[in-house]
Image (cartoon, rainbow over all chains, first blue to last red; front, side, top):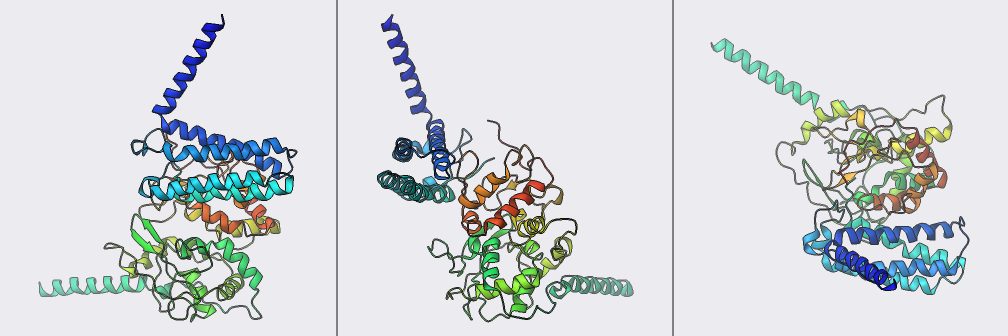
Length: 145
Length: 308
């Protein structure tokens, strides 16, 4: 009984990995959504709408770092259009700028994680690292709807 | 026959003369009244500076200090490319030698101190709503910013859009010259919100579709539109389901403060610099703007959403 479950699970994992590998547009959208979800939790804690939780705080910055590591590879040349992508042409015109922005986001998220031991530290760190959102979207994202 | 040709020549002459008169920058009477006396209020000027978003177009592109208004940003449009001029207090290259009266005239009538039309890429169709006291304070504040040397290149516009004089016709259609009048039955906060959004904030300039002459389509005001500066769209900001109908007042205030939408997307493109400005406004002003946006008539998005 155990074996079929493992097989099915392995297959499912394999299939989702294949889908992701073949569809960078879908994967980067999902990655962005994970960043948005982490930010939603972070904003709620920063505003006191949710009690501060240092484990959750670390998860937020971890999600940011993981997303930042993935981003540069999720924009291959054949994904400039299609799938309702809102990626701006500048990503490909200024590849080094885009990669540098992702690296900065990753570094800022790591710095933030080391400063978020208590609520005050978290608030300051969260405010600083989320500046990356608008900086990057200003240049590299073009709304379609 | 000779007499006939003469009559035609006469009509043509009158036609040309009429066109010359109709396009005269002096036809726009707005912004010529005497300014209120007394000292300028620099704090008020600073607030209007951030409400007006001057830095979004006039700051030197790429520079860290957004108060260096040396200009140079290219604005691409269906009519050609506009280059934002230097509006720093530099006496030769900026507006440092202007009088407050000349500044008011430029902001309201879109007319330069030497009597020429400005192109409406400079949103005087909104700035004309600003009252004389506010404009005087704004000018005084701008004179405290760093003077930046260097003139910006001329706009790059094909014929016939390179004929500035023809803008006189455009203004006869789209520039009504009316300063904002607070509505008698509304609260001070409601009037403040309307003033900030319609006047200095000039939100409708990007968040509305434009007709073939480049004027805002009034029945779709605030319903979003194609991005005038490239690909993509500018969203509908009316309380329609296709706009921001599901947003609470605090959602709008949050966006104007941190740039985050209710889904915690961060606004980008041309809205990112706007948020850097609105973040500097007093909280009460952001709240007033949010209230006014929620009070707008709900309109379906001017640009249809792409199928998912």
